Length: 525
Figure 1 (cartoon, rainbow, N blue to C red):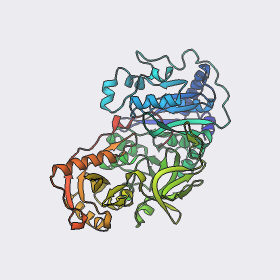
Figure 2: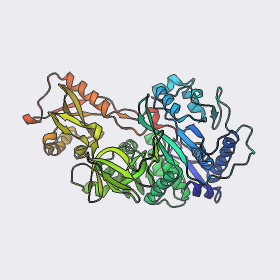
Figure 3: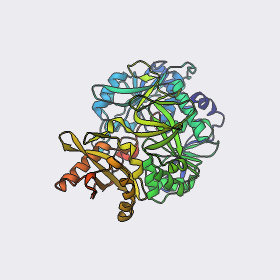
Figure 4: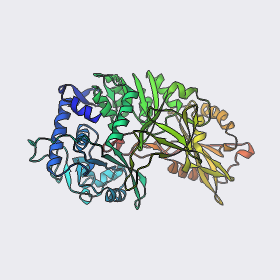
């Protein structure tokens, strides 16, 4: 599909490709299809002139937008692989990661270089931090240079001809996902696995030429542009995003669950089909999106290792009455199974080739406990999130979906240490803004009573902390907040065996997304 996009950009060079919203909700063209083609050619020629060829590794620290997309297309054309820098990971982690990746060059825009330099104190307030980029490799500036920036990528080579595109398979992108400073872990996707993933997205979303799509990830941009649809990058402000949705009336929208909740909180409306992923999306959230005008509201189950894996529409999710979280049938080409411990394993053409420094393997171990229900994947929680209470293993993901009753925005079950290796099980519930607290508690009574031996010892009303670029609920931080609140209340209240349930309120303040959700360009999700 990347090849298809590269060829099609010249067919209609004057048509809009990437759109941006203004603060007042207006729409402006950030790049035409011809602009993207020119940028890609220029970057490919400049990189080739600087020795970047098939098999080279290039670090990328460029904000999402036309330049980031052109960089990725240029690297793909050369057969080089992109290693994506995450400014939210921390300098020590990034140094360890790039010691493993060993980039031949680092492409950074002026903003990334400021975060790594003079603006470091300001960036820390937004939870963004980069090491001195020169520690990672030779640095070249993409886009306008500011004082103190590295040399521009395309200085002196603006008239050079780009090389012929590489048409063989090989590594395309490295995305770091987990691991420790001493042992970082990175997913390696090949050109063929990227193409398979984007073909699956195109088949799922079915973008139509000429009608805008709203979304900012690489896996939204490429299939949409290849289909002839312009892509609007989501505004950072919730109010501006609401105005942008109203003005554009996009045929398809991809936003993370936190972005959807902010739009709904501002009274925003949707059109066409709405997709969400990167963090859990319950039936309640999808139902609210549909009530706000969407024709369809889809939850996408995806991993860095395999994007996308499964999808479910609101009607199916809302009608599911079993335990666990229904995430839908495996998408075409995806094979799913569970191992003896109940962990979900996935395979397919879009699966990662390997982890950097490791041998390829046919199955992706998701870390999710799951079962297959008439061919559909039902998640039962993360294996590592198990809570041990009175010698009983409790998997929160099996019960959390039932807690998303009317008035509940998010709900987590977390373990709080209770001494001697035991834990108390606490439900932390984040109400929808303006929800009636008494009605919310009454609505939770039924689901709580049906949880049997997994019934929590206490229910706390709180804003649940979020973390990471995709702003997923932070279980560790939530557990710490619950522990502090329970400790402040004195002796532990009795647990489920007593028939009483302790309700309380934890005032933590609604968390703000690090850096307003702005990161560097990645490969998906």
